[in-house]
Image (cartoon, rainbow, N blue to C red; front, top):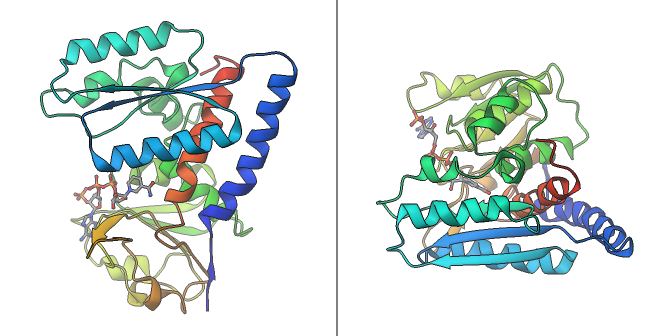
Length: 282
Ligand code: NAP
């Protein structure tokens, strides 16, 4: 039976480091890091993330600033708010909650966040640096998948890694991170032929499709590391893309949903906020 990789446990260790960092900053009489979040409307997923972010920031001594707007806010007003946060020396990280209402251009607004406060690594500047292999903020979900793979203690170098999904926020950055770790990486998507056969070759299989329980044991190589990024709602419960019960006996390591990738992303976001407050290097 495979070992369960607990995102909660990995997050706990990182949080202890962040907490002592913030305590050190405080004891030196310096300003503690501050994470600003912006939400438009009342999407239940976004509200859940913000509550969770606030709870963890509070626990770690990191300041928060929550800005919420009604659905009918104009794009110009939203951009103006981001400009103000960009110029505000007491704000280190800016997190814009997605989804945004239809009348707002998500890409345009996101690109307004200045790169040194773009703690989720979504601006063109950070993404450009990331894909060129330069130091940058890295999209937190992808980074979470990588940290969980690393937490197994298994070396990534030279391993065959397969990522199912090629989105800009999950699939592509995860594949790039694995490539940077010297894995041999294959990216699969909805037009991929022989998906099962390709996945069965993988020492490391990362699944980011948004298709509940899609990946069964038939897709998994004996002894593989399986990372499930998927979060779908099924019969009122959060469900991953991997059929956990079916796969756990075949995989050497597997992440649960919930309690896996998603349990670490917020902590990584807060760690990035601390880095952003340290120096404006990005
Ligand atoms: P997305 O933009 O919808 O991308 C899904 C990807 O899966 C696409 O590249 C798509 O291929 C591919 N795909 C869909 N059906 C497929 C099939 N039958 N065979 C092979 N590939 C297939 O989704 P996303 O934003 O990347 O998110 C993926 C999942 O991760 C979702 O469940 C999302 O909720 C979850 N997520 C979790 C976290 C977290 O913190 N845990 C954060 C973000 C997202 P095409 O490109 O060809 O369409």
